[in-house]
Image 1 (cartoon, rainbow, N blue to C red):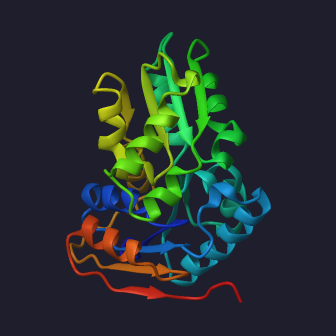
Image 2 (cartoon, rainbow, N blue to C red; image 1 turned 90 degrees about the horizontal axis):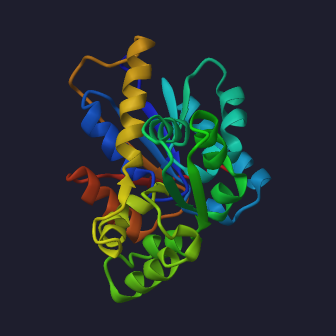
Length: 266
């Protein structure tokens, strides 16, 4: 059981930030990644559509004998976590929201926390609820930033157009005076430096991928599911081939990666 792979899925390249963090934190673990590039961005889809996509991807990962499933997508985590857990049955399922919300709440007192994410994530109100539950004095300001995912997927990173879009969002008065900012989308670490530059390093940016990877390591250890054999392999599947995915996958794993396009919807 310990030697089986960890399954990770997202709507596109964003979940690679979590996969990369897991590879660093758990170097012995094999990973199977599924990027649903055909249906991105999930943040623009209905809750029911996101649940249906997540359920089918979960079954794909189950069929690949994954010992655990990581929902490396905030939109899916916010609306489909319970559905995926039920479908996976005895296979542990991890989302990317709970570890981050818990970590932020544990280190917050009378501070203003900003949250940026897709429409689906922000409209769900999940970050506000979970942070306030554990830290009632926290002020939580949320802002939907729907243009960021397609911008990143199209490869517009650290360019004039990305500077303008990011600056426009972060200048919103809702985020005025934030002490820290949660990048509540797994795509957003890819523009971490641009966001940090906007704030001149004066606002703490929450590194969600590292927090999630640390949490998963602790959970897998408690379940005695850690792999102690140093012979990992990485498999990448996508629902629609894109050059940006291929480029990002190679960049994050620093090795040649074979990407296979598969149709899991029929």
